[in-house]
Image (cartoon, rainbow, N blue to C red; front, top):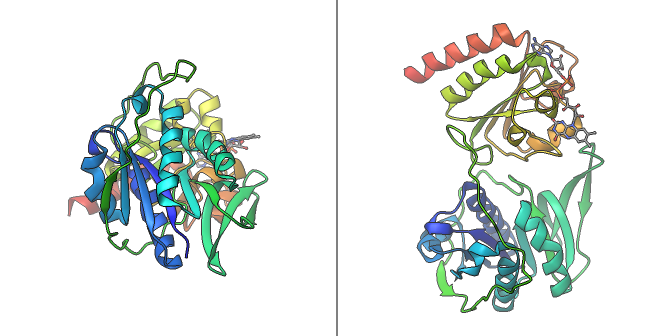
Length: 327
Ligand SMILES: Cc1cc2nc3c(=O)[nH]c(=O)nc-3n(C[C@H](O)[C@H](O)[C@H](O)COP(=O)(O)OP(=O)(O)OC[C@H]3O[C@@H](n4cnc5c(N)ncnc54)[C@H](O)[C@@H]3O)c2cc1C
């Protein structure tokens, strides 16, 4: 039996889609191990999110609404995590592989005397203990790792451990963590938040992503991509080559040095399929590739592929989709 702990941000009672997904994946693992899932909900308004977390599979929701989480999220979040582990006594702590999760995981692991596995893309159970998978050598190979004994701390990439079946509803008991956190003068402070200007969903939340690469030939190539993304209610992404060319902003970059995404549908247009790009999109449920080179590596990963010039394929695809969706 493995009791699992995880943490999500819940400002204003709203849990980001990536947080819900992590809770659902952790809940599915808890069911397999016969353990319980405890979720630490962080931020003012966390109590309001308890129902959402129960529906996603949380057995116990610990809330922490301390002001310091806003001004010093790294240190205050770590303090809350440590306190929550005292309550939950987990064998496994699953954290998101985002900037704060990556900051917390090694420090939490050290303090708990735990084994650490980072950037996990999937997991399974062997002899009742979780076995993790992570990509290595720039995504060219998969390493299978297990923490030999004691507590394990792992950071999970978007889509890790995702199962298609709906989660069981957890017990959903709600408790206040009961920890007063006072920001210390030497704690790094968050100076400002800047929201990305983007119409439609963000890349991490989008169920459909249309991504463009060097094969677009210029920034104007992103205009039809945006039309397709809008038709699908999704977001636009880019390869590093397209970003380096200055055709798309860095925040759109998908891959090893960009974002990791796990949408239902990922349409790669004029992208060759370098391992560093695939690391960022390989958890998509369905990859569709449009490329004029039939030998492009992306076709090895795509469920559907169109060999052709995007200038011809994309407008026809968008028009056909619009027609289908209008019916
Ligand atoms: C340390 C490191 C980190 C990296 N991180 C990332 C990362 O995070 N993300 C990332 O994407 N890359 C990353 N890269 C770069 C990566 O190795 C590739 O160079 C990059 O992904 C290539 O981008 P691309 O597929 O758009 O371009 P290309 O490899 O040049 O491919 C362009 C494709 O477009 C096709 N094409 C051309 N014209 C058309 C047309 N008219 N219609 C249809 N298809 C067409 C071509 O056949 C070709 O397959 C990284 C590299 C390193 C070394």
